[in-house]
Image (cartoon, rainbow, N blue to C red; front, side, top):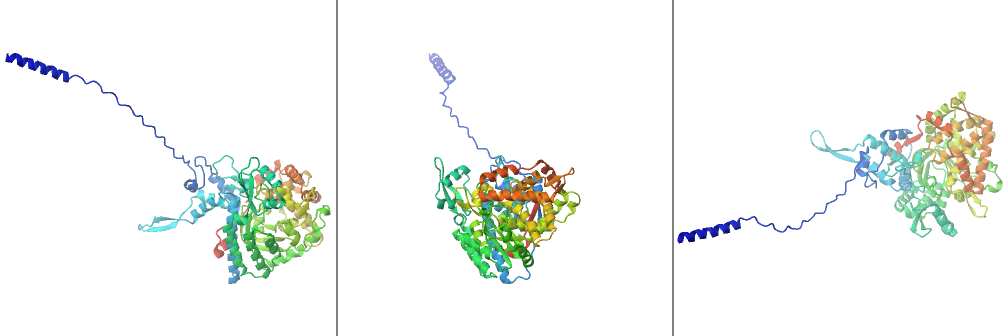
Length: 631
């Protein structure tokens, strides 16, 4: 019995164990949580750019590194080689402590204006300047052979040294010789804005013209002023609301520095007229009224030092030709050469009344045209950008020049350097036969003078067909500087034989000036067809070729018909004077469109000149060593 019960017990336990060993039913599956895929923003693909500086600084430069393009090292070397380094050293050993203090303040004021020009030339110009200057003046930490920390100068790569040299020459990343085309860019075919930074980048030319046309005369004068910038104040439905900002408000810090320096310089002035000018210029930087300082500058004399420091040329305003750029030059007067030129100057007032144009278009200008021959200590801003200034007639404000005249200055050391690397070898390569052996120095020098003298002649303040009184530059707008430069060239040619006839210039200059005009064209056209002097030279060359003044032989060299040269020049002078006298922008545009293109034969001749420098690149050794110049 007990056995049976035991068996039954074991059977029940076995059954229970068997049941417990059955495979478990699967548990309900838990919901699957799908994690979202983390999408990482890819790091910018940094192309293998040749510039360590751009690669390290592209963000602060505002560049899209993936799209940034740079010139090759060979391109940079070629571009830089077009400008020949010329050391500028002047003897200061005889200068007093007072003289040295005067020049030191001149240079400091000039450098403030130089910085303004960096800002005017392009919106990001200062960033590139500082990138390069910080790198070239920076230092790096390393160790010597004994493991001690030392500081050594940071050395730029060959590429970055070439890049920074070209940035300095152009005051930014736009190649002034190639129509302001960007050589550092992340955009396709980028060029600098036509209005540089004088205008809001979003202003269209037609909008600006429409807005200004609707203004009352007083407000219109503010917008057309050479000393204001123009910005969009409020976007309108058809025409944006604009505002004009004076330079004193646009560049307050730098103009305050320049003003302060000139005020200090006045206490070291070596003549009363120079002191009066310095105080007037210092005030103009603060109140934006340049008529008084321009007048004082023209009348300043009897000083052995020359200062140019203001806003004058409008070449960089290619939108309307209204706005003046900052520039400065400091020079040491060569009194003997100044006196020599003044003997020629005395004939200009009478010749100005004989211009080939109806007398109703002529302004009776003062007989006073002061001349200053000087050796340049330094040039900054517009005066020192790319192609260097060899001579100038200023100021450009016709309302000032009609009252007190203008001043011409001749940069003697620059002219000698430019002739040696430019006109002299070009003449030898472009003129035919024995003409190539002609010494053209005096023709070059005196045409530099007569060109500037011509700027002082002819229409200034004019009356338009509708009775409006204005000035030539305002009437012709963006065409004004090109027409005026062409007038300067042909007016200079017009003056030479008349000065020869008066005994003021040597007789051989009549022929030599005609001969020099041909290599003179090729010298200037190499500045870049978009540059004002190159464009004006092209107008003159094409006009003369149309009238058989120049004849090109099978070897590509030219002869010059001297008689036809002066006949054609007289006709051309009349046309240009009439365009200015009537203030007709349509006639100016038509003339430029007709004669402003490069003829086929020119490219071939230019190829034979490719090994020659285009212009000089001054290295201001004395200004750096003695007066702390940074340029």
